[in-house]
Image (tube, helix red, strand yellow):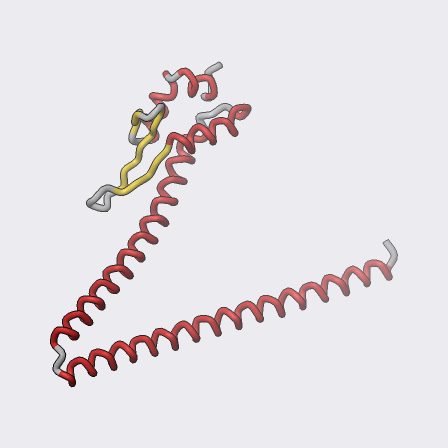
Length: 169
């Protein structure tokens, strides 16, 4: 490469780096504006709710006030449920990945792709009514294990899994 070509490449790198910094700054500015707008919308919604509540109180509309409070309660429960569902989904993903990774190495390298498909079809992470995590490994519609160790033990004796399992041909 000539010095001119090297200089041209360095100039291009500088140009691209500057463009990347501008794009990143623009993105950050847009995110900041979005958060500011969301905050202002939330403040206005809160003010409108307070105004509606005060209007009902001043008019002496106790039935309307009761309906208002019930709606507020339902909305609050819905928001909490949505947050809980989001947290559970996040926790479910973490637990799923942990269980999946605890088992994927049992498959022989030449059967890794098939093993991933088999394992993803078998593994289920869910939550019971008390909010406790439950792990299930299913095969042909029946639960065969509820943890990685038991699944590996079952798989070592199961025909289709045994074929793809490390050390078994």
